[in-house]
Image 1 (cartoon, rainbow, N blue to C red):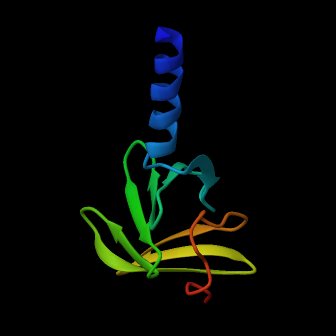
Image 2 (cartoon, rainbow, N blue to C red):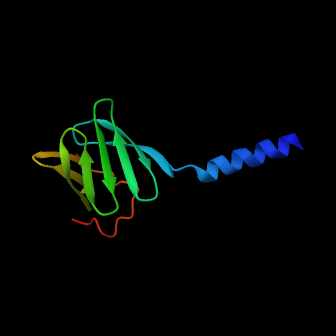
Length: 101
């Protein structure tokens, strides 16, 4: 009976987890970003940078400010002020219908 409770707890923990997906995206400069996706946002991180993307097509890079992100058939661009990060072959795991450039 105790094993059943442990399995039920483990299954509940997996279902309740806020992150839905995790993978790596590689920018045009070769930087590798780990992507963690929740229901309405995507967090891209390297050792020195974090990029927050929302379903509303907004982007935030702590220390740099806020901007936008969009995707085309050529990949994804994140633009914050004069700073941009591009991913030629990768598109974040978010609802993409609104963020087409």
